[in-house]
Image (cartoon, rainbow, N blue to C red; front, side, top):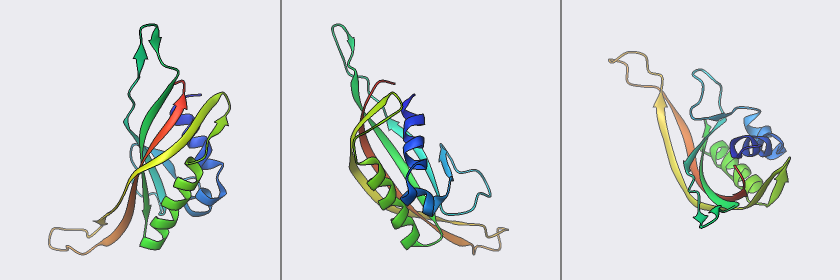
Length: 139
């Protein structure tokens, strides 16, 4: 099991995450038209420490989790659920995860919709962007 599959499995197994986002967990970007709330994930950095005999078994990967919702309260709740799920060490299949540390959390968001150039109003979508450093063993 690779890092992406392991993180996805952990989040889908978490009732606190799926009670808010259901199964709307995507890598890279949200599918157009997908309802809110939802979660997008991307690897920010994945250094591969090594020594004279090759790569180390354990490494720290930096993950960005963007929690999208129509309300700030819901975006914050989803961010808290993601942090709570990923902070604890666990083994998923053959993949060992260590603890996750929160490196940053930011309030972001954007106005979506609005239609034409003359119509600038739209709906503001809240986004909590959380960066986590996650220790794990293997790919």
